[in-house]
Length: 226
Image 1 (tube, helix red, strand yellow):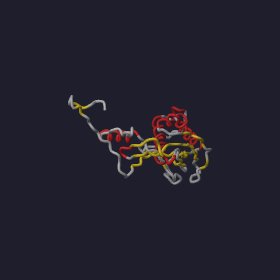
Image 2 (tube, helix red, strand yellow; image 1 turned 135 degrees about the vertical axis):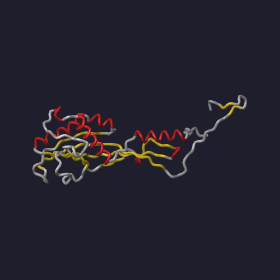
Image 3 (cartoon, rainbow, N blue to C red; image 1 turned 120 degrees about the horizontal axis):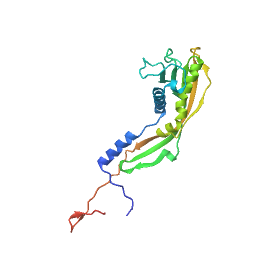
Image 4 (tube, helix red, strand yellow; image 1 turned 120 degrees about the vertical axis):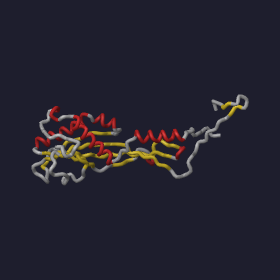
C-alpha cells in the first residue's frame, strides 16, 4: 500500500484559504507597476512639502485636479496631454522582457485536491518618468524632488511591493520640450524586476479526500489516533 495520502480539507477551510490568498496578493503586471509608481509619486507630493525640503518652486499638488498646480498621469502620449498644465509628470513604461526561472514555468506549489498548479515568470521592465516644467531651474528642482522619493526609499519600495529589483538608474539632462520651447523635460529612469504568477485550474477529474471515522466496538467511541 502506498504511504502517500492527501490531507483532508473541509469546504469551509478551502473557502477561507481562497479568500485569504486573494486579499493578501497583489497581481503584478505591466499596468499595475505603473500604477504603483503613480501612487508613490502622489503620496510623496501630498506628504512632503517641497519648501521644507529646500526647493524653491511654488507649484503644489492637490488630489482635486481643478486645484492642483501639478499634473500627474500615466500616459504614453504625454506630448499632447494637457499642454496648459505645467509642471507635469508623466509615467510610462518601456518594453517588458519575460523569462521563466524553472522548467515549464512551474513553481513548487500545487493543490491536488483542486487540480491546481501555480506558474510564474520573471519580468524586467524599465519605467520612465517625464518631468516637464519651466524655466529650467524649476524643471531641475521638480525632477530632483520626484527623484528623492525613489532614491531615499527604494529599498522600502522593493520590500513592500516584493520587487526582485527596484532601482532609479539615472536622471537625464534637461532638454527643450519640442512642442513648447518655453518648457524643459527631464527623464527619470527606473528599472524594475518582478514576479508574475497565476494558478492553472485543470479540467480533468479532481482528486477528492474522504473523511472516515473508525469506532471502537468496545468503548463505543471513535479512535483518536488513526
